[in-house]
Length: 311
Image (cartoon, rainbow, N blue to C red; front, side, top):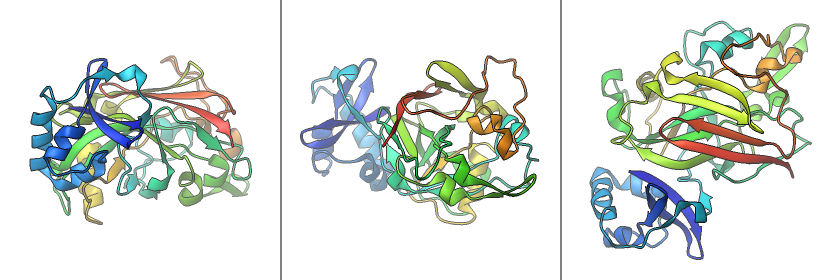
């Protein structure tokens, strides 16, 4: 099932995507005891029996389908938390002169930064002049996970979506000596509008193997990132298993899997980058300027398209 959240006079409503159409599932959710304009977070937290019932009900003729293109989309969910894995693609490590760490980077991004798949990303010149982009696969936990072995990790996944891990690099990477930098993941990663999410959630039964998906980013139509999950260092099961050894991964929590090479940071020699040439169509470029549109695409899920604007 492919699920979107869209805006209406009643608030944010959920719908099942059927080709170019969306079938609202309000009536189906009310039949399951949910209020109108329910959120996906609540549906996920209700458990697998509710998911299965919603899947069955949403196939019925209970609501009139509307064109997807006519809807204003909200984020498909506001996660319980966002755990991020960095340093997870070799080409991103290479361009930033970093060796592969022994463990995946581990930081948290605030859910208050979530915006919709076509919303503006508001820039604040008081915070940064180096606004960046990072396309990442977002894994949505469905069943609580604690100390989960790798071989059972995917059993705990509800579905997948896309996150643009918007980063402000002059807050994240701070020079303090020639050739030496302090990394600050709080200031550089977690702030207003830092987590565009969507456009839909694809449930795990429809996207059973996340290990081969292609990831791409364009800035004003210019290809900036181009890689695939086949080249990730720690894959989805490894991330779930690792993070669940530290904490219980609750239903509705999102894991952002890390970004491939090509962000503007990889061209910033002031912050220690090595902007080497590429042969896959990726063009090196500067940080995002106000008015530019960043499009993040993952095969099988769709595309985020957010304009960065000066607030």
